[in-house]
Length: 133
Image 1 (cartoon, rainbow, N blue to C red):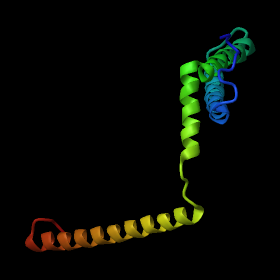
Image 2: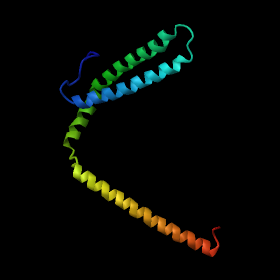
Image 3: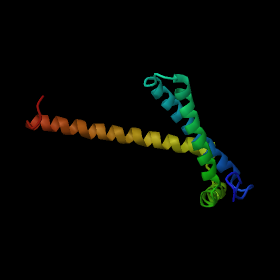
Image 4: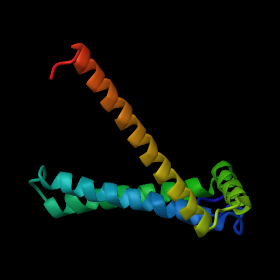
């Protein structure tokens, strides 16, 4: 298998593309941070080193990322992941909104109960003199 050959070309396409795009976002962000870092330390040929080194590093990491998403073990994992995601039964918008309401109301009720218990205990402990005013 050559470096630029795509393993199992038609399978797991979307998850491989999204994985590569996510890696590229991280690589470009890292190159930008490296370029900013180098701007304060370079005296001779500042533009060549400040922009050239991060660009070369980003290009090398992009090739590595491409290779990793097309390596047989990684690609088989990503293909399997996409296959499993297609099997997932996703909740409808109405179900998600209803569940969110239940969680918020339950959290508010529990917070109110805890506030009440804390208030009663603090009054009790002040009354018996354990806690200061």
